Length: 355
Image 1 (tube, rainbow, N blue to C red):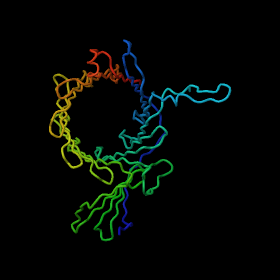
Image 2 (cartoon, helix red, strand yellow):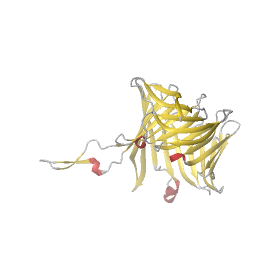
Image 3 (tube, one colour):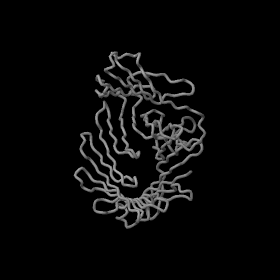
Image 4 (cartoon, rainbow, N blue to C red):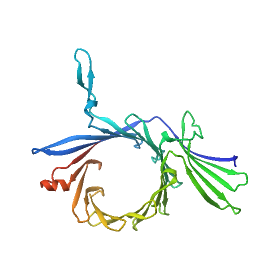
């Protein structure tokens, strides 16, 4: 049995202060179509992002503007009995992402809420002493099986994540419990030999855990590998990353749950033409897609084109910026469909950013 008298706890806490909103950003997406020679823009969805007084994002809420007819009308009884159009049917909340950041602006947790404020999942980020992301865990609070192991302070402090260490009486077994929102979601058992060498025996996850990803970095603080597991610790897959001498990403390899190569992304940087080429290969090294990004004078994307394996342009996205260098509009063109009508001037989707 484990000796609770040798319990060690490390707690990572965040201090909440009053949230002063500095500004908001709205992204409105219109679908564009042409009918009888007339171009029409129809607002489909919008996103509202809210920031605190330090400029860190607090939440991102997605709205749909395609509200069903049964939600646009209400039935009124009495003298003027019948269906009446509601006044507030212009949009409906679909999803809302709530973010928590530390004092440096690093994302600590993300909560995804539904249209009725129900929680779909919560996600936590853990960092090492260099400030590099080393772990990400997502779980569904509605599927939690255990009770809280640590109670939060009711006033100013909230437990984000913590670690509990416990040894057995002979110091030959180490149990490590990892807490998120005060719940034990991961448990790892280690064996300790007579030379104090520690070997992992096994990992156990609460049934609420959706996935966990561990990140590995090199001495230059570059991400070189990530490994993900899902329900009950079953492998989901992994990725490896390579860089050039300037520290720019040049290759990403994706492996499936059996460790077999699933997809390869090769990235080439053409500084002379201010272009980035991304080549996607399947497991048989067959090229199936290419993305070309033309950069503007500030090094930001200007035109992004998606091509197939025969160099035919499938989709084109054009980025526009305001005088402060912020994204103003993104216009998306469906080159396949518009090629049939010999009209490449009408985008199929326009996203407008408002600050």
